[in-house]
Image (tube, rainbow, N blue to C red; front, side, top):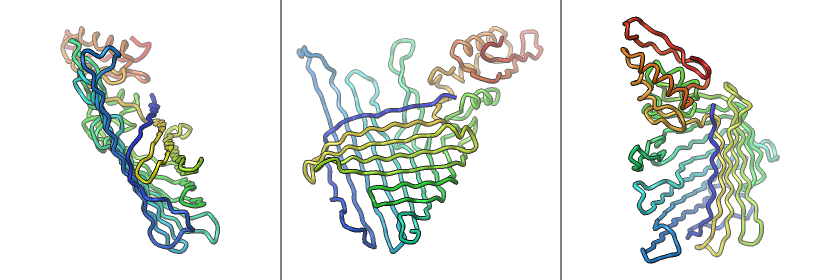
Length: 353
């Protein structure tokens, strides 16, 4: 099964509206803080410019909002994160996303005596706003794009009880050894001919969701940590880490989601941000029907190639599968009518004829 490792790194100045952090001892009631930023960038070059470069524009909108509640031994922490960015380069047919994330985190805790430990229950939801595409070129050299993701495809929902260690709002770790996780996808990305369903599933499916399904259930352990530290005056670093292990399948392969935000504050209205994000998803394989995506054969073309009545088409499908590495493990049984009219079964796989 293939995995996806994504790194996003950008450094951008922006204008932000934010409330000052609370430095006093926690009090009962609500505490709220938020940050919204809008970045816009444009570069324009005329034909006489000899320094090189391509005209382009880019925009990014980021919104975070924390609203936490405390009453005696009870705490309830919530955070909303929304981030969307887009860029367009001159002479390119399509604009492209640079960021796209929508996430909600909520955790409620009950303090154990006078310690830093809490009984807890958490909920995490995340998805994206807009469609995502894989870009390429057709036979004529024209730019084309194939849809690979969209809102709620995938969508993740996980929740479960656990233990929370919380020093303060800037340093906390939640351990949830019994976490339920649901992955939601649109049926468009998992609709596969029954003859190809086994190969689709063996290759990892679509974000782990099997052929002709729209959800996947997992049960495992989750660890979430948050640490914000002041490096020097007006310079702070925020670290957010999420780990998840699925007990039901390959528990040794741990999903990782790490974000580091470095904030340099000029005043209440002007700051500069440096953000680093690393994501490892063990089910991050994108096997998209009708797309020929990430080195996998175009399922529709593959299906058409072995229509009944042609041994040549069956042979061609076999060659396509071998060259593009469509089958990575068990054989696919394809039922085709031979030219003689009899039923022919052919096993396809690496190293098999």
